[in-house]
Every structure is written in C-alpha cells, then in structure tokens.
Length: 329
Image 1: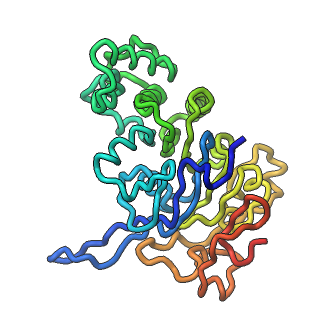
Image 2 (image 1 turned 120 degrees about the horizontal axis):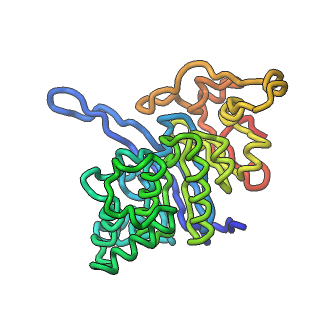
Image 3 (image 1 turned 90 degrees about the horizontal axis):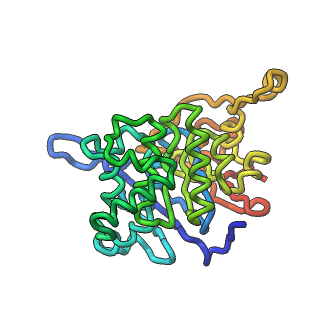
C-alpha cells in the first residue's frame, strides 16, 4: 500500500515549467518559447509507480528529464527527499543523481557501440569510484544476473544482442548505483510485443526486490494500467487528470482522458462493434502558441465559452481524484 501523505513523498514537483527558446534571424534573437511543460504539480511516493500518458509532444519525457535535471526548469521546484534539486550546485546535483536514474526508450541508441556491455554497466561505478578491478567486474556480474543476462556476456558488444537483451543491459546500468528512483522513459516502445511483457515483469520484480520507485512514461494505456499505481494524463504541457489506475479506467472525468480510453481496442468483436468511440478533430496546437483558457478547448467535444476564456485549475473530485476541467464532476 503506497502512502499518500505529502510529507512522505519521495518526489514532489511544484509548478514545474520547462521552456525551450525559439531562436530566429541573422542575429539569433529569441522570439518566443516552446512551453513543453507549463506549471505542473504532482508527487511520487516511495515504492509506487506513477504512470504518465498522453499523445506525443505533450511533455511526458521532458518532465522526466527535468526531474533528473537533464533539462533546467524555467520555473517551479523539484523536491527529492525534501531537497530542492533546482537549488543544487553542480557537485551536489552529481551526488544526488546517484539515487536517480533513467531507462531510455531506444536500447539501440542509448548504448555506446564501441564499448562492451560489461564496460557500459561498469561505467557508473568507475565514475563514482565505487569499485575497482575484480570487485567492479563481480558487481557487474551480479547486475547481469539480476536482470536475467548471463555473466558470460560481459565482453560482448551491443550489436551482438537483441533489442530485449539490450534493454536489460540498460536496466542493469540504471541499477549500478543502487538508485531509489528511476524514470522509465517508454522502456518497451522499441521492443517486439512478445518481449514487452518480459521487460515489464522484470521491472515489477526489481521494484518488489529493491524497493524502487518509478515514473513510468508510455503510450500503451493497457501497459500503464498493468504496472502503475496511479496515472497522470498530460496534454500540451499540462496534467489534466491524476488518480489511481482503477479509478481512471472505470471513471475517467476529463474529456481528453475519455477519448484516450475509448481508443483502446477490446478483444471482443461484439462489444467492440457496439461501444461508443470518441473521435477528436484537429491536431494538437503548438506548444509555442497554446490556446487561451483550457489547452484542450480547440478539440474538446463539450467545449463552452468559459473553456476558451478561463484556464481550469486542478481540483479534487471524489477521493484521490484530481481533474482540470470546468465541467467534470
């Protein structure tokens, strides 16, 4: 059971903004900002998995990387064990990152092809001076065994492995420094369907064994439902709904969430033929020039005048259910 007391949160994000400057012209002047993440707040509790879902470009990956301070926030606070990561200097941040790691989406691009997989997994240990010589190699062998890879593979190169095996190498690298928190940035998106379940099962096993906390970013709503304790739905840099996984799938309140869930196919032709699908018209607006009021107002099937004029705040609707919609109840 995951505690949901703010004082017990492992990660607490308050008003996070991540903007990327738009540079144009001969003199390379800034003419605007891409508001990739625009003032979001949420918490992640020890031992839980918070799922992040939404269309491409909505800010999921940017949020994860901002928490790790790969991207510098334009505003807001990021607390890890009540320590504001935004205020840390370079060395303080370097030491804190030992407890915060990431598993990348693409297991082909995230591994150095000129290094053996043993060297790749050992690199964090070398950088932080945690083990040397034979002790380092033994630690890498333990990590390989932990993720289901044979220690005899240490001296092979990434191109000699399948996609699923490469992702296991990436997971072993993320575990090398004994982290508490891991950002799983669509870790199964580039894998065959037959391999995806194996990787998810591995992540769940590691979480139970090591007490890990995950931010799980994905497009696959059924997979998010399987692995997550709570789910946050993002749209155009904003969180529009946040609640427990069961509640979200049984009682979605935001029109965008309802549209996403209606797109999940049901493996029963009779039910699939009779259920109502919600089709959204148009494309996602540009994050460089988001619409006024509610970000979803340009595509919402129940839009009213107030939606285009006033931005809805996240509010509590029912127990542990937050939504940013004027008409959700």
